[in-house]
Image (cartoon, rainbow, N blue to C red; front, side, top):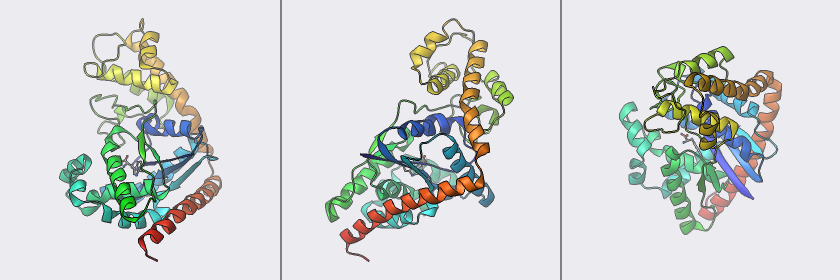
Length: 324
Ligand code: TRP
């Protein structure tokens, strides 16, 4: 049976890009035949030196959205990284199987190092990511293309450990489900939809009111051709709306183009808004219905399974290394 691991950083309100890019795919995976770990990787978020109260709220909200999203908790374990100290412990061990030069070559490091200044957490972040994956011996990692390099590094780290100390870790593969849509801002479709977007009208948050969702889609930036055609390079705005519609309805891009071949942009925008409203509605409802007692029960039992799995790996790793 496959073991899947993926992580989401708690950095602001969950938005449609997170849902259609990752969480929606996790829901599907959770109904297939694998054991899944879906983790709120708060230790990773520390690299951005977040405000304490914002971080607390993001962790809690993200946890609630994951539970509310419909992830099947029979097959899947949802937990917060900082509740399982084995991640950071394994990260130290694995740092001895990773070259400084490799870390310095990571594109994300190079980008972030220049804007935040360079503390060593930014540099060693991919080792923590490797330990997230390897602590549960995951062999499948559904992530976006921006994480390909980090996953490649994880594979190298695992191989080096195995070569030196015995076959402990599987070599994990990157998977990106069909629905791994990469959403762009509705206002600046050349930029990714993000939590910290300068223009909040470009981002649909999971808990936006219906009217607001409609308003945001109606005012989304398109082009003057007035033909619903997928061409991300020349028509980034419309192409983004096509991606959203296709992802929510689990349709192909070409099917969506065909469905709206006779529609004006105005009509199409409303259709996309309505489909998104219908998609978010049950998630919002589940989120609001989740009591803190219910949540606490889920957190406690999920953390216990995650801990059991992590401790098993740690025992093997320590034995292989001859420590403890
Ligand atoms: N680095 C990932 C991101 O920024 C988040 C992440 C942390 C992750 N650990 C992971 C993703 C392990 C997949 C597997 O999006």
